[in-house]
Length: 366
Image 1: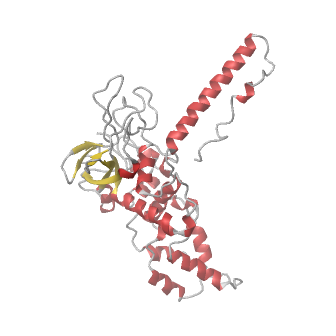
Image 2 (image 1 turned 90 degrees about the horizontal axis):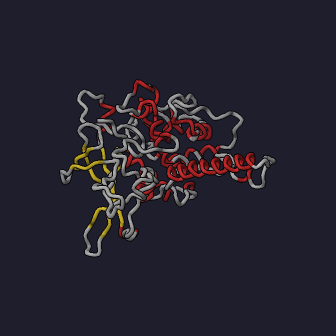
């Protein structure tokens, strides 16, 4: 069976892995996300997702004609195991076999009168990283600008991820959710099987556990440079060092060892401003980045954190709608031109140029 991929990071969710390298075993530890609601009778019932149209393949699935009240809904985290790394999982608590990355709407009919359950697979480490990200949006004064359609809660995370699944009931399975940035690399590895050798740099990067970074603090501090001799603003250096320890400027480094940082500070005069600048460079998650020397696992953490930063509810669906709308404008403009030529008035007929604007004119940031 084809390989299935984590809905958060785009890395493989592998099954039983005999002979696997130890550092990749975190890829087996999976959680299935789904949603449920509290009924009027006080019981918990899984949400049913409906296709927008049997044949349209539009985005996304929705909660049908009678959706439950939002205040009664919650996201469930189900421990689950996939024996072969495909879409079939067995939940640990109930022993029930379920299919991930699809909404089973069988039996199909021209007019559907029912929905189906939806499960999305994620690595446990990626979900814990998402929890940390969500917490940072509430605790850091520098994260107050997070947009309303960004990830600020576990429900926002669910809404963002599930809306990337196309509402196509005729497509039996999906193995990876589309993502506007293509998960910042690794496309060549994501085939029917996970093929690290097709892109060794990104393949190895995506296999690193973002929560297990050996010698994390020392690996960061080794990049400190002596403070410039002309820099007399010690208070500025101290402020950047203090902010790093309080997770204000670089929230994805929440687990820096404060004792080691203070020990380093006492060993000399260091340029904390320069270190901050390099740690906040957007390219830091690239394995080819040479601006700073940090472990691949930390680079992978930053990659996944950036995916969470960039994510928006309805992001991929909105992008597809824009592409379709642009195609329609092109068709309309072409029709106007053809008609103008036909009647012999190809003199830039009024309104013809208004049909088409550049595709990037008002597009979603990518």
